[in-house]
Image 1 (cartoon, rainbow, N blue to C red):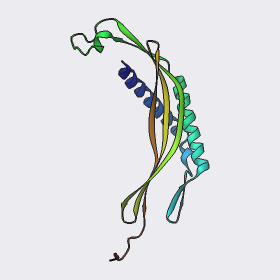
Image 2: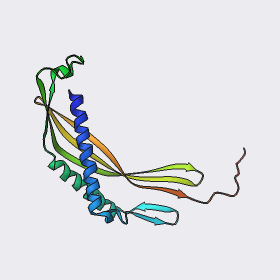
Image 3: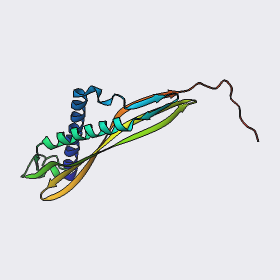
Length: 168
């Protein structure tokens, strides 16, 4: 039963996060302008712009979660037995999902060496949403994490003209 509740809560929460981010970026396409500073051989996150993007998207997700109605489901006991003959039969077990909780966000940056003088740089905004689930008076919390890719770059330098190794 808890597994069914968890699947539904994850689906609703993930859908709400994606919808909130899509709507906010659609309303403010310039939001991410200046997020990164590029220089000779480097790239860096502009902390001021990054915090503005983080706060704006965090607020959008919180607002979207707040307008989600409480979800109530009734699952027939026969469906919980695992017997296909009883599936959909019997009285229902009530399940409530409350979209209450909180949202957290943080920036995640990573570098990956792809070849000589080629590095992939990736920046993601990681959103973490905590949701309450109530099942017959029992309460459980669920955390849904979504990583929103914000930037991927290939940083390339010049390949060396000669390779040498040091012998002992």
